[in-house]
Length: 425
Image (tube, rainbow, N blue to C red; front, side, top):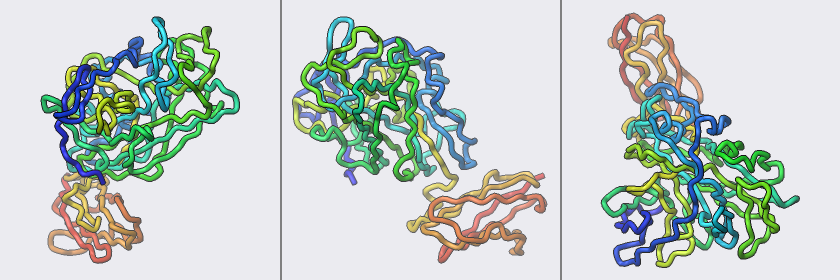
C-alpha cells in the first residue's frame, strides 16, 4: 500500500504540478488537447446509464454520473475533440492550422460520491461504506487496419492506492502513481484488458459534433471494490496499438472524412469534457491524465497522473458513470473482524410497513435475527440461515406490531449484537 503523505507541490504555468520545492517549474505545451464545440443536450450519449440511486439511508444501488449531476446543477461543457490515446508522442493529430504530436497517453477519472450535486439521492456521508462493481463511459473508435487487434488496459484504484497531493495555495487533490516507462501505475487494486477489433468500429466516427461518441464501454470490475466510509476510487485506461507506427504517422481525426492519412492507424477516443462555468464543488471528481509532462518529465519524480482540478482552470472530466452499492452500516457499526449490525430503515416505521435490517459478516455464517419487545419476550424469528460474507440485508413486515419500542438481535458465530427501533401509528 502506498504510504499516504502530503506532498507540497508548486503550481506551474497552466496549473501543472512540479515535484517539490527544489524542482524546476515546467511549463508544458498547452496546445493539446484543443477544445471543440459546446456539448448540446441533444449530443449527450443517450446510451449512457445514469439511473438514480434509492433514497439515502435505505441502502441500494444505481449509477452515479458526476457530469450528469453537474449538468443538473447548471454546469455546461465543451468537449475535447480528437483526444486520441497513444503510447507515445510519435504520431500526430491534424488540426486546421497543422499537425500536433499526441500528448495524452493515459486517461481516467477520480470518483467521490459525497458531492452535493448528487442531490437525488442526497450525498453519502463520510461514514457510509460502499462498493463499485461496474463503470460506463462513451467513446468512439476508428478501426482502419483490417485484421488488427488493439488493447485497452483498465486499472482500478481503491482509496488506499490514491496519493494525496497539494497545489500551491493549499488546494487538495488525489491521484494514482504513474510510471512513464510503462505508461501505467505500478500500484493498482485490480486490472483488466479489453480487445478492440473491427466489430468495435464506430460508424458515426466522422460526425462533426459530440454525438459521434455513440459507443458505450460497459465494464464489470474484475472484482467488486469495497470502499471505506468517505473513501474515493479511480480508474485509468491506456491504449496499446496492434499495428506498428513511426514518427509523424497521422491519425484520422473525427471531423474530416475526406483528407485521410496515407498511413492508417486505429484511433481510440474517450468522451472528454471541460466544465465551462466552474461551479464550485469541494469533492474529488475530476479527470486524471498520463500527459506528456508526466511521460517525458524535464525533472525527476513526476510519478503521478496529472490531476485536473487545479485552481483557476476549467476542470476536466472523463464522462464516466459508476455503479455504486451503499450500505446503512457505518464504520462504527462494524468490528475488526468485519461483523456488524446496522440500524433499521425506516425508523420510526409506520405499523404495517416493511423495515430493512442490514448486517455484515466477516465470513459466511449461520445467522439468526430475532425480534423482542422491551420486556424481553420473543415475538418473531426475522431470519435464520446461512449468509455470505460481506454486507447483507433482510426485510421484515411490521403488520403484527403495535406502536412501541422493539429490540432486534443478531447471532452469527461468536458475534452478537442488538439495537432498537420504534413503531408508530
